[in-house]
Image 1 (cartoon, rainbow, N blue to C red):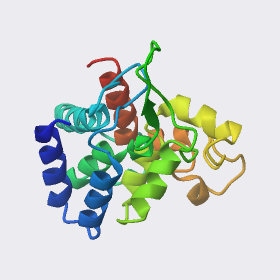
Image 2: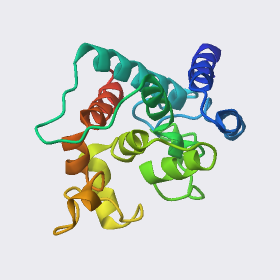
Image 3: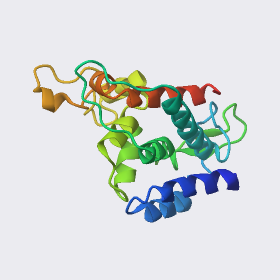
Image 4: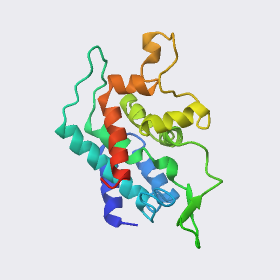
Length: 206
């Protein structure tokens, strides 16, 4: 575990002042967030890889959010974005991976999937976070769609609950479509697309 990474993450999370954050941090510590790998053999496949990846995504989000002014599309209803939203979404989007990988020897991959791990990716992150803090809507969208099209393909198969889709429900009222699909979330809130970009960028060593 990198003590500096842990300290940075805890300081950032506590700095949001979000009610319940101390309890969430205690859960991260107890369940092994700071020692977990980010994958079995790809990005961050080492002890502490998950925490390092999460911090990198937050830093990329902050950098590009400052560098590129995100203006809404014509007719879009963009939610406001604050620093605490970047902190919470960037640092917590992958807590679904806590407990997901088990060390193994004699294989190309250093870790294997833990069959006892609950199903889900982004949805599981949202469920775990919601046990301790109340997320703002923009944070939910950033976490829900942080895998872009890759995530919606899994959701559409039903393995992650089946409640999210690429294009939404045809014929639904406009207010009922907001944030319900990847296309809708990306159209209204560019930060959701930027979240996906930063996650992918770090996965490829950016």
